Image 1: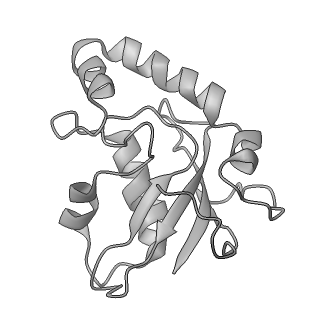
Image 2: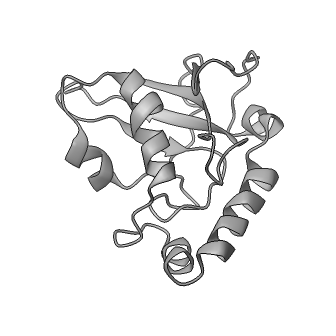
Length: 156
């Protein structure tokens, strides 16, 4: 099963104010195997591939348990990943090096990407999503998107 979720960057981080469209794919073995998740619109983070949006699988697989459900990904896992990047296990070497050598420059670049690629409008334009979507919930960090028609998924 494949679907999208709208996700807001956690407050008190350089990602605050950002809005991302997250591609979620549940494997046949779910919940015993972790879902695959990826950012559709661009994000600058050591553990997220800038071009594909893929999130480092080790990060998900190490912490995944069948007791978790999808809400854990969007209320705990992704906010923690954005709050506490791991530059020693990078998918984005530039972001990892910048975070370790020049943390203030890293934070500035994250904020630049948020402004450029993570506006509410950017989420609506990300990928090939043609469904109209409601405003993001101000009470939570996620909002469920609809299922995409077959054949319109971007590879993430």
